[in-house]
View 1 (cartoon, rainbow, N blue to C red):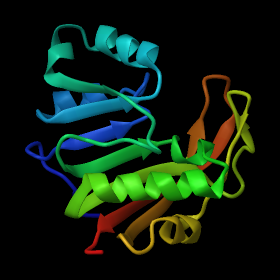
View 2 (cartoon, rainbow, N blue to C red; view 1 turned 180 degrees about the vertical axis):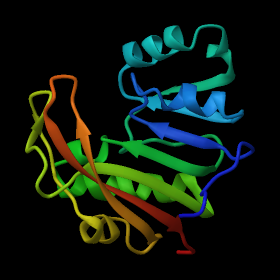
View 3 (tube, rainbow, N blue to C red; view 1 turned 90 degrees about the vertical axis):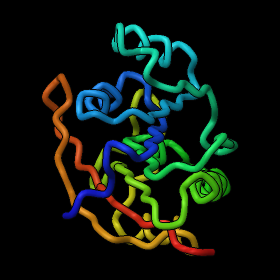
Length: 172
């Protein structure tokens, strides 16, 4: 799979919370990173984890179903936020907000529980997805360009199957 971004791209990661991706991006030389989370405490924890690099990141408290960014993203990254949206209307709003946020030619990189993955996470019900359901959820504004499956091992040793997808933003 070819690389979908460069360090000059604007990367928006939703559900940023305790995910180490933001630090990894900074380590790789990315300098236009926005961390989005619905929970201010999660972003505060991320700031603390980043230490002296915390000021290099834009922090946005917001719900992905109504998120409005100040400028377009080249890459929208979501590891395990979309699968918490069990209402089809919420998933449609998320897709609309992602389409509004990502520039034409940009990418949506998403990971959700696979069809044989857990049905709950952190005490909440989740929607499981395969490549087809993700392509359908974002159809009209994004086209599927790559998909793969992985197994995530939790700290307790449980296996959680994930579906990963890369979708390219198309013209409306």
